[in-house]
Structure formats: structure tokens, C-alpha cells
Length: 89
Image 1 (cartoon, rainbow, N blue to C red):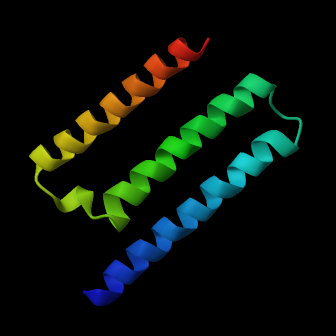
Image 2 (tube, rainbow, N blue to C red; image 1 turned 90 degrees about the vertical axis):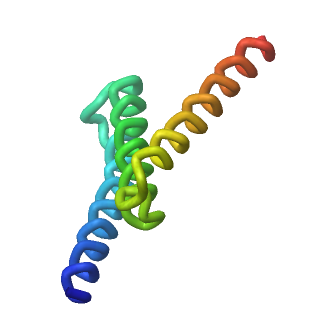
């Protein structure tokens, strides 16, 4: 049983390393335009966040109400960032 969890965490770690490497590849090599690389980087960042929160912070095994609370906090933080960006300009 313990070796299964070690394998799972090792696979997640390798996925995180691959996603971090992909951000370098998107911008270093000229395969994508700037905005395509930016979109791919944001997608990779969202995937990394999901893996970290879901597995390393064990949110995947928590009650759904706690997950909904975390999603609500994230949404409100994003709204505050958008509001702050409009007040700066």
C-alpha cells in the first residue's frame, strides 16, 4: 500500500517537472507565437496548481464543501486582482 502512494507521488512529481520544463520550451523555441506560448504557460500553471493542491495538499480526499470553499476563495481573489488592475489604469 505504501509503495502505491510513493509511486503516485513520484508520477505527480515527474508531471510537475515536465510542466515546469514545458514553460521554458514554449518561450525558448520558436514553435509558438507569444500569445500561444502565454496561453500554454497559463494552462500548464493551472495544471500544476491543480496537482499540487489536489495531491500534495490532500484536497482531493477532503469533503467537497472544503473544496468548494477553496474554489470560492480563489474566485474572490481573482476578482480582487481584476478590480485592482482596473483601478491602477
